[in-house]
Image (cartoon, rainbow, N blue to C red; front, side, top):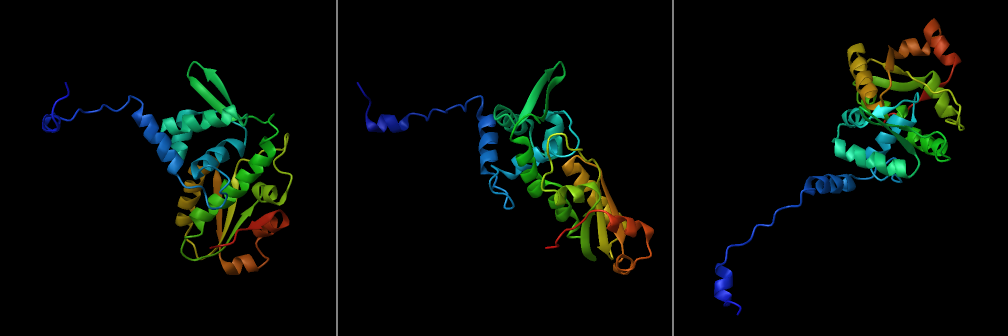
Length: 228
């Protein structure tokens, strides 16, 4: 026979133990709540776009899940889940080794070139350089030069067989301290996984034509980055 309502109320509440995978569920939900990036909202999250930028841009390389987690400043479970989803879609490839799984781009995928182009525009060197250099006090102009400026000018980049670029070269024009520019370059390098080299010149030096180094820069590809 069922007890009375009063007896039922006197019974201590049973504690429900969370499932063993509750932490993974929380991580998954946190990843879903990460807002889509405003520059390219077609990506599921900003984290996904930045992960793809590490793997699809620059020299081809294999990375461990831990390396990616450190670069993206997130937890290992989130990175592993994202990588596995992209590998199932044929965008990345996984290789098992005694030391763990390694991940790299899959250049044989028909999605590689168009997706890498989108990733470069939304999460590549230009976007990252803007975030870290634009706030510097005294900055008047910001440019990419060299190979990466050429890649942005080439609508066909990247394509299978195209020469990947390593170093990102930045020209900072204005009254900016070299120490501040160096710190910004280091922050960009940590996010991109690529070496970043910054050159600082005053506005007067940039307007004049008596600097052989600046003449060399002007003779090649130069991409002016709009400042916010």
